[in-house]
Image 1 (spheres, helix red, strand yellow):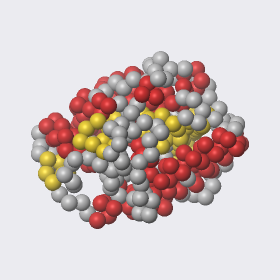
Image 2 (cartoon, helix red, strand yellow):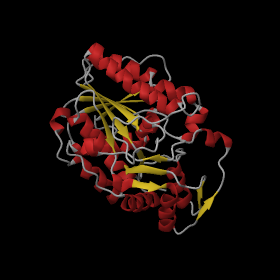
Image 3 (tube, one colour):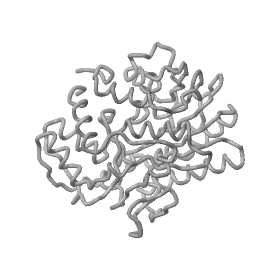
Length: 350
C-alpha cells in the first residue's frame, strides 16, 4: 500500500494547483490557520501549500495530532505545520501565540450520517466555532478570512432556473433535523457579513459543491463516497433512491484551486460558487460511470432510517460558476476523467 504523495497521479494534481498563475506572494512567509485540514479538501489544500514552497506556516487546528501527523508524515517535521489541539464543539478557541495572517475555516460535518447523529455539532461548527474564529481574526488583525460554505445553502430548486447563481434562494424546510446543515451555513455567511460591517474584517465566502477525489475519507457517507467504497471492495454499487437527483460534482483539485482563487482574488464580502457544468450529472448516471470503471453493477436498496434522515431533499442542485471564472478560475477535470483518476489512486492507496 502506497501513500498519496508516492503516487504520480496524485502528485501531478497537487503540482498543477501549486503552479497555477495566482498571486501566491500574498501568502509568502505568512501564518495560515486552517480548520478541517485532514478532511477531503483541506488535506489536499495543505499538500498544495507544501508543494508551493511559500515559506509559510500552517496552524492546523484539529482533534488528533496523531491523525494529522500520519496524514502529513512526509513533511510533518519541515516546519510547515504547527498543530493546535481543538475540538470544534468547544465553547472557546485555544490560546494561539503569534500572528494569524489568513484563516480558512473548512471544518464541518459534511455527510449524511453526521448530520443525523450529530446535529448539534453540525450547527455549532458552522456558527459558534465560526464566531470564535472570526473574533480571533479581528483580534489578530488577520488580512483575510475565508468561510467554506456549501451548495446546500440554495435549498430545493423552485423550478424556475437550471443553474443556481450566487443570488438564488431556494426552499428549505427549517423545521427539520436535516435543515441544521444548510441553515447553519446560511447563518455562517450572515455572520461573516456582520463581522465585515461591524468589525471591519475582510471576509470572503466560497460555496463548494459536492466534492470527490482520492482524499475521500473512509468514514464519509455521502452517496459518491459510498459508490467509490463499494467499487473498491469489488461490491455492487448500492443506489438508495431512483437516482434522479441532478447535482454538480467537482474533483478535489478543482475545489482546492477554487478556494485559493477566492482567498487570493475574491472581493471582500462576496460569495463564489466553485463549480463547473462539466461536473453536472444525475446520481444514477454517476453510479453507472463508477460501476463501469470498476466492473461491477448498480443495485437499488432503501437506506436505513438514521442514514435517510441525513439525506438532502434537493432533487436538482446545479451551480453556476461564471462569477468565479471572472477571477480567472478554470476547472481542470471533468466528471469522467475525475472518476478514472480517483479510482486509479484509491486502488493503489487501499
